[in-house]
Length: 429
Image 1 (cartoon, helix red, strand yellow):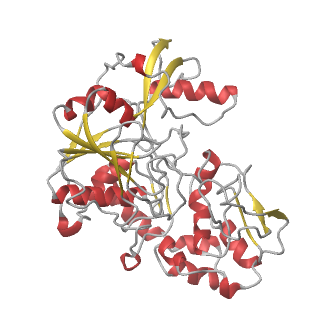
Image 2 (tube, rainbow, N blue to C red):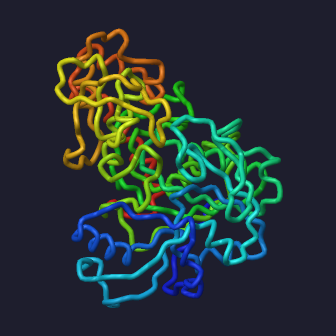
Image 3 (cartoon, rainbow, N blue to C red):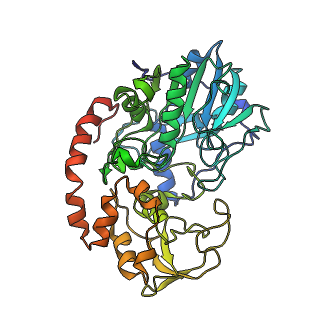
């Protein structure tokens, strides 16, 4: 049973005074002056689910609340408007002054009865390595317990859900099947369904828009980096995806969570969305997020995709790619305590100035395989989990072109598109 609450025109202004000095205010990515003006205008027009507390605060009144979130769970507050007659087709002239506050801080100051914070991969603050086990802890600001859902268990236990009347999910996804926040969403919904706890999803835009691309997962390869029969790029927001999980009865025993979506206001998927906060340590900017889907396949090979550098998911290389001119040497840094090829010179390619691509590209994976000195050691067992199928590795080893490989994805993508239609909240254009 799905419930969708649409936004109203009113907005809360009365907690502005608490913003100054908050320790969890998130900084926007650096932009040129022109890009910044465009982004500010866009923010005025678009409101994420979290930016609409006039809707969800009433749902939390007199409830004991749990929140699954991380550093991306920010709330934007309008302080001053200029050009009140803003029109969606004329965003360049609009300006806005606003401040940001983390969702946990906002709920805390609004005297919502918060009981627990739940943290996904990379942790509540979003600084842990990919795949690193996260321990339970305590938020130093609010004193709230933090329950890790990337430690001993990925699905909340009945004990971990004790005292919770309603659960909020607020994570910024990047639209890729192997980005694990949608797997955390699955397990949270499943656990809440089993314990009769309603789930409120505060929706956020998909930076890859409506793009659908890549092979559909074969369920025999199901894992935490791919739990559902979908393409690598699914073209849905996390709110739409939650509806698909429910509607397709992907939860254990066909259970369905009591689901409420707070949609993004004034949004369609043709809009380019620049994330104001990096969603994980190794996706520092728009370029890395755009290239992530293409370069993440290297996680299943002996090739580095830039972890341990300042250009994560914007470069790739290994000591075995001798015919390639660009070089880098990975070293430990935030999000990569022991990067692949730590301290070893890698040969590869710099894509940091590459133009934006709409889907995913196999160009660099195919090029790296062609240029590797030892093809027998190129792939590891994780590659099939990332691809979701054992066919892609076989196709690459056989020397198929990207066009030939893509032709084998078409039927699965078309079937998925038909299924996807039932769960959309926003237009694709």
